[in-house]
Amino acid sequence: SKAGDTFNFALLHHDAEEGVLPALPADVHDLLMPHIALRRAGPGCKVDFWKRLAPDFVAGYDYLWSMDDDIRTDFFDWDFYRYHLLAYNPLVSQPSVVGWAPKRRSSDWNFVRATHSSNTSWVTRKIEAMTPVISTKIWPAIFSRAWSVNASCVHATQDFMFNIGNVAKVLGCVETPLLVVNTPVRHGDCMNMDKTSSCVRWRHGKEWCRKDCFGISEKEADLLAQAFGGECAAAKDPKAWKGKCV
Image (cartoon, rainbow, N blue to C red; front, top):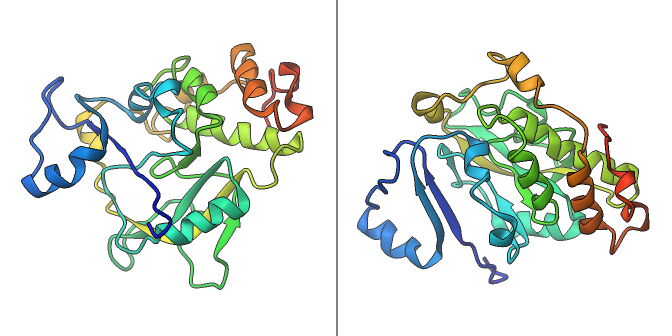
């Protein structure tokens, strides 16, 4: 990037045999190896992989960008995106999404699709699990939630991120909890994880996913109070967070 930002990678090969890291193409290997912080091989769902990213591991970073393997950045501009992170300081954000080709599936949610309007970004009520950019400030609480739910369903943990943002806004700790930045990524819609794991989609496992939807726990409330308490008086007391579901 023009600002000299550093990007490191956690490569999670869900289509590989457990414990057998696939060989990277020579040119990719030479380019990425200095920046690979973690590699793991074996089937799993998104929450399984998020559980590999312990808070101590991500503590040295400002943001964690979780990206599906069918996302490309042909049209994405990091410097443009970076400006919006600095300007709005969202807790969770994402690039807008376009399909692989015209009229191909981009996102099922029209409010995160790329637009031709003059709006460079907009506040949203949800963020796609395929490409969230998450502030590491809230990662300890998300990590705790990931270990408290059935990892086969991403939607409950995804919604927990939104809940944190909404409660933080109600407490006056943030103005823009969730943001879409209109510099698009391309979605290949390969559904590769469906082919290699037992991950549950919301429409196929509503009851299963719903069991993992619950208010902020006592442990999560403590972690969020620690994360926000130093800069937001209303968030210092864990009671301000515990049990909340907005």
